[in-house]
Length: 573
Image (tube, rainbow, N blue to C red):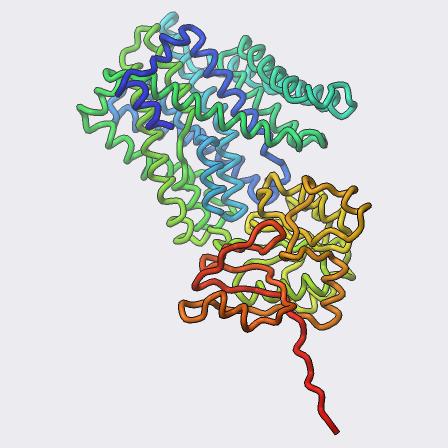
């Protein structure tokens, strides 16, 4: 996105956002940032803080003060910024960019606690960084008018404004919750009503104080995320798509609005490059290590959090806004912020984005790298399949709400979870991150379809499977294909057939393919009644044989099939 913006703007001149949008550009970007922070707040569940709450609190308090101080010192002594610009930029540098952090963590598959710490820090510190910049700006503006003014004349009113904005955001979330749960808003209007309310709250609270609206929408998002509103689950895919579109559009617009003269400082001086190195290797690590001193967070997780801090859209947007305001105050060097903020974004995204997997492995904070299989329903068939998956090194988990049905899984020593997979509490008691494939294999076909429909938007429609549908016209009418998971096995036999074959002694068989022994050779060794279930790639990727898709086995794959017992030869007397 940055590259697209640079090409479209400074390099080719195809797009000039200021000419195209005029005075609407800044309000558009501000509202877009507000919606992005609200969407981020909706992903924060307070139950995640059971294991990382103290660390997040320390980073949001001690970390803000230490990071602001070190960032300002680096800006003044290393980057060569004048003192007001350095102090203001130091406040902005507190933000760590949830629009970059969250996708990065999701892709890298980081363990739950460091993942939670970085996600919460990114979203909580975004409005905090904006408020720090406001405090610095208001202080220097007041000093221009009244030379005897102190920071204590400026900070308390701004903090009160932020608290008031947070209360307004909380109240708005409670009102939305009350309306949605009582059916006062039709289902098809819930998304537009929610987004209009967010924008209204943002604009209203910004009238109290500049950038206080960011606090309000973040609090509003977190409050809604922790209210029991079932309809919000259907809104999640839409708001995630909106966030992606907003991030993409705003990043490109901001990059395209750069001018070559704003990049001159980066081209003609060593100072910005030394500043970037100090930011990466001194400011961030010291901030985190000081903040987490005395906590129970292990050192490997502290070091990982100390390294990962990519900046994103909020840093660029706020820097661009205050660069103009500093110019209005007659403070020289404000325009440097625009080019320097882009340099920070590019440097941190490249440094942290390309190193996150390596650092996570070195510090042992990476989750399971091989795709895992979540089996819903503890039956003799799923227990047998789980044993085969463990044998090939794939993470596996059996979930069932019946302790009695889990007895065989417990006896075999297989990973299991006692609880209802559809219960919201399961998301917080069971780490679902390692499991990229879900197989619903209970004896209740409708329940299997419900599980698949629930998880399809999280893991993908092609990664949720269930046993085939029961025979009979009535069953096919009750469960249309659109709400079912993909049917396992090419012949798609149902749960009753699977359990009957298991009772008759059918077992799973593993076959390793090679250049000398290919798939056709393997098929010749199998019984004509055997049913192919899945293949396990060398990378651990799982590919199932279904009624609709037949994967292409290749050398190095392990083919797992469901085969009948060997027939005993009759002995003549």
